[in-house]
Length: 165
Length: 183
Image 1 (tube, rainbow over the protein chains, first blue to last red):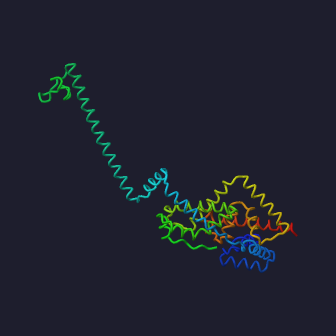
Image 2: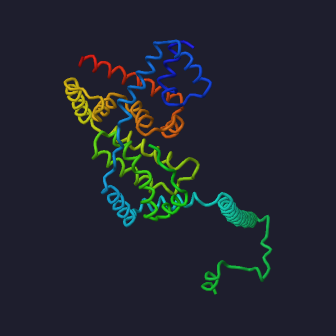
């Protein structure tokens, strides 16, 4: 390994104890014979000891937890509309997958049934309207005659018949 | 500075709104979070603000924590993101003020240099890019492994390695420059 490569390892993995045993042995063999790399290693170790190993952790102030707890309590006591809305959608997403699938299938089947029934009614109305129109125009030109029996005889809706009679 | 892992029962309790359980989580993790915030913000007031924001976010998102990663890693990732966002929000004037303070500090160091002074560490960290500073803080001050750093920041291990390398080269050069001026 070249000195450049050794220095790259020294300044990172070797210094941080991230090197595997095989590579560590290779580096240390190099250090035994290369004074420049050995000096670099010592410089790094001294630098770390001088600068970072003496850094003391900073303690958070005692009042910090009280501030956080007060914020949490305030937020819980005043839930916004937006938050309630987001909770609804979040809860909707949390429904287990199989339950959600069954619900979606149910909604789909119901929607399909409504569409089919509506379509059938529309088709029946169109068919009846078509038949009536054909018979009416047929009667006008004298091709057809109304074959209405006495029972079927009608003058309009019930309310219209009431006023006619 | 190793911190113990947070018990999963405690997380579940806290996610259900148990404030005492959340206080326990605070006790376990606040030291790490406050220290990272402090090294990033470089003053107590901003470090407190960042820490407060981090804990509010943790509490709000506890229910969405799925135990796929360690809780510590998840909480520290929130810390790092909050600290970086906070740094972005600092105005240019504020940055200039801090840079000015660093220069004054460098001058004072030239007169009576003391590498062991903790203010010197702050001065050195201030000379790094935010990305380099973050890696150095997590490795040198918090003592995390490369894998942990990569998980927290969301970068691969080689990027952690190269950021540490560049940061250390810069710090060594800076130290030599100051030492040369003094001698």
